[in-house]
Image (cartoon, rainbow, N blue to C red):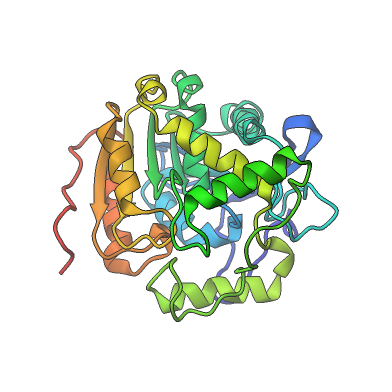
Length: 322
């Protein structure tokens, strides 16, 4: 178990955990970790669904924070990234065959790991691509997940070398021609801190960079045309009124206003059509809310603490941070 999760001096593995692998959809081996709180009785379990090019180690700090609040955390690396099986011969390509594969993996994680081994009630916290997976699967999760919190849900794209409509057309064309494994874009896994769209916190950025430098095999490079086609097609579908009406799980949308990956306005539009959703704006934060500076990160964690047990009203964070 000790060699399944990776520790660095600035990012030790949380105590009281189990780690391993489970079989996802179509036999794909997925790495997971279950982190128990020392507080008893537990207030429930957070099912943490990561974003693209993320891995369990990146969330050790957030896992500790949630454990300290009496919440267990169950998380896994998405197929094709982190410590999970890659899907193409080139392990650097960020790929998925069908977006539904992500959803089936989540359902299998709930069935095989969370339901047997974790503590009720179950809450889902997801970031970016993970939030897109949650939005798509949500109509089928009603009897298993009590509440969801979605940070920077990937429902549109910004900050790319091409406008989103062009990316949609190009990725669809290449996928239709059987060239879905073609990489589109640059490998940004080792980008510098200056000008990055992810976080304004230099210390946390460098901590994550240290993990990547020590274990570059946990990361991937540019997404493939197929990945972009599948995710953008799903983003359009889950943003529709028809789909959002099917989601009845109470949902918190954590929207960073300076998001350089998913435009804030797209997240705001999503909330307008989402009857079960409530928007919490985090003014000044960039895309990776849980990797941000304390002043922004604390707002997200406070909202989670109030929302997840369902015992308090949601704090209003719509005012600019001081």
